[in-house]
Image 1 (cartoon, helix red, strand yellow):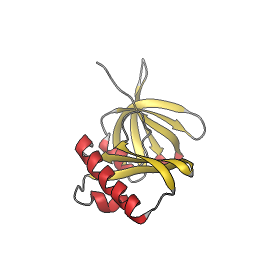
Image 2 (image 1 turned 90 degrees about the vertical axis):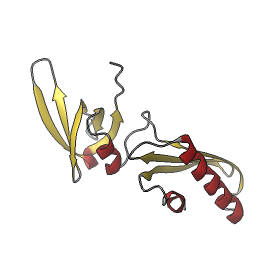
Image 3 (image 1 turned 60 degrees about the vertical axis):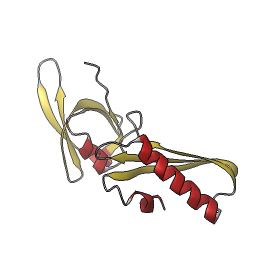
Length: 143
């Protein structure tokens, strides 16, 4: 349903839709991202459209809270498109084996990312398949 409301903004995409809580007291969270970011106006437009559709078709029983927002930097990367958007930024990734790696995202090809990992003495390029990663966070730099 949400896809229909973002067709006029091809740079927008859905990161995740979460419905949580108990019937009669649920929270529907729609996280969006965009190749050029997401504006408050875009979130408001989607929120109004989704809310109208939910009410018109009575899709959620009882009371609910709807939140439409940008995935933001505090939310892990979820899609290939998000990785591509963040080329050039620093990431902290965690593999399913528990290994944590920090580095600059150099490229995204197919289902693989390449991180430039620097230590005191060396810099190496490390290729990792995205499906081997349990979590990927963009690191914020205040330099």
